[in-house]
Amino acid sequence: MKNKISNYLNLIATVNAIILTIIFLFFNPYKQEDINLGHLTCLLILPSIVSLLFSLMNKKLLAIIAAIITLPLCLYFGVAKIPSVFNLYLLTPILYLFGTKFRFFSEKI
Image 1: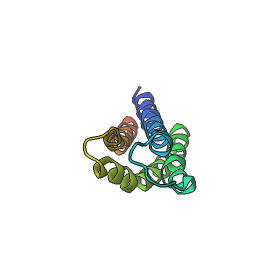
Image 2: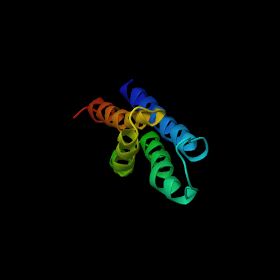
Image 3: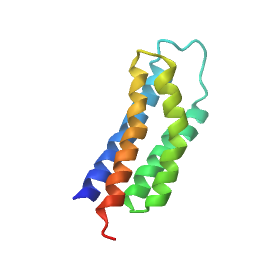
Image 4: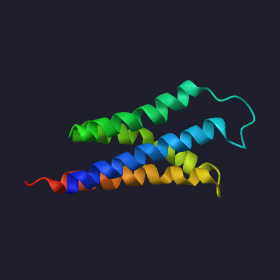
């Protein structure tokens, strides 16, 4: 049961990061110059997808490492423009944290 909750939380966090990154790249009203798509893809979308995949494969340590990689950029985007839609980036590391918590405490020691 808790593994399913963990998987759902990681799925929601990944979808959150991907949707907000697409909004940031293509529909951002604050954008003044072109943004390099490669940097944000490598720094935010790719680790989010990797974290989701490792979570579904039950590789906890690798999922945590991929989630930690997304933490600084999510915090930066979440705090950079207050208030805006990009404050929802702060949900991504929080959901990864709760998903990891459910994953660790779901196994019997």
